[in-house]
Image (cartoon, rainbow, N blue to C red):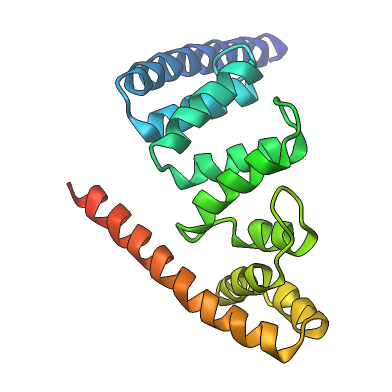
Length: 184
């Protein structure tokens, strides 16, 4: 019985390795052809060591290629890597840049709001912080918005609400652009 379990285990390991290797090769081929989703997935494979030896330099490289093509998850992850110094030197200005690109597509708004509230990587700006926090609240998380409301005066809140409406136009336009690109 132990022999059978051992053989099954070895078979599982072998097929997992073969599947990961072929999946890696297919993903790499698509990524090299410019497919943003494949570039992001390849970056994740390098980041996790999934089907390939873990390589943070390659992970950043492929993630950046996808992010530059507008892949929102790649933009968010690249922002996080720079924010935490994960695989790259910590750079809050670069983190804010990628968080903003993702936030303008409806993702990472909380991260960007906090950066504006704290002045991390961007000039401290309570109006921008509050405006982005309103978008976070639209996604079901109200703690940041409530914290800023207690901290800020009414004039800043009103200015932030106006700015939030301006940001919504940007977010909606990006979502519409992404939806029309998916249809093609």
